[in-house]
Amino acid sequence: MTAPVILSARGVTKRFGGRGDVIARGLARLGLARPRPVVRAVEDVSFDLHRGEVLGVVGESGCGKSTLGRMVAGLLDPSEGEITAEAPDASTGPLPMQMIFQDPFSSLNPRKRVSSLIGEAPRVHRIVSPSDLDGYVTDLMDRCGIDASYRDRFSHQFSGGQRQRIGIARALAVKPEILVCDEAVSALDVSIQAQIINLFMDLRDEFGLTYLFISHDLGVVEHIADRIIVMYLGRIVECGPAEQIFHDPQHPYTRALIDGVPRLDRRRTVYAPIKGDIPSPIDPPKGCHFHPRCPLAEARCRSARPALRDIAPGRQAACHLIEPDAIKGEPTWPATQTG
Ligand code: SF4
Image (cartoon, rainbow, N blue to C red; front, side, top):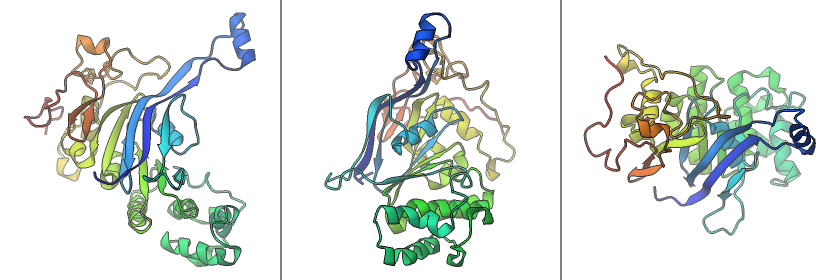
């Protein structure tokens, strides 16, 4: 990847709960209330986002991917670490960023007409003059595939796919450089998902956008992402180019996730689901967080946390059993499926 880095996260950690306010702490000290538990949502996550790329973040529910997205978009502050988003020459200050949410219905104000939903932010921020606003909104609706003659309708008069298009047009209206998409197509029918993904890719080319694309659906991420981060219980367990991750996954968790993606060419494959549930982030397992569910766990996995190490150019994984040259040789892991 030769494109410059425009967003960088270093040692980002997010904890919820814990000490609480003065009253909660006082009650806990007097034994009148239990101390609030600490939820470790994201732990020590570092990555770079390059201009123009789509970085997919995948993992099961509760892995911390949405919390990470919210921190990147500036909606949450990290408990530790920092996230910086600046143009490479640092002359224009922080890069504008927008977030697109899973549920387009609840993210749109039902009392506002489409023209106002899309046009309000650029008007308030003086991105366009009042005289140009109508044309600006019409142009955005056009580019996002919304009939401009519907500009005076309300969001409840649209289908789910159209509402997501309105959400995208609203995000683009403030001219962002980075879009954080949090399960942005998960609530849509499969055929509509494909349309919205194609729209994302067209808009990337047209506006030079960079995406952090968060999804639990690996089938969707495979189509859109250039690189992938796999998260488990708040930590990155593997990252690398999308094609390599999908065709040669190294971490046992990544392998299990990818084995679970339905494929037409694997119709006779017997799916071997990951055993057990994702543990609680309040009391995560010691050592490798994945060890209670990992078929390859050894004694050291229960006590020592595996570091995220370089295993090949552009690829990293956190597993005691993966050697730095794992990718060059024969497949490292026994097959988990029969066919
Ligand atoms: Fe499995 Fe051990 Fe690797 Fe964790 S470190 S993924 S438990 S083999």
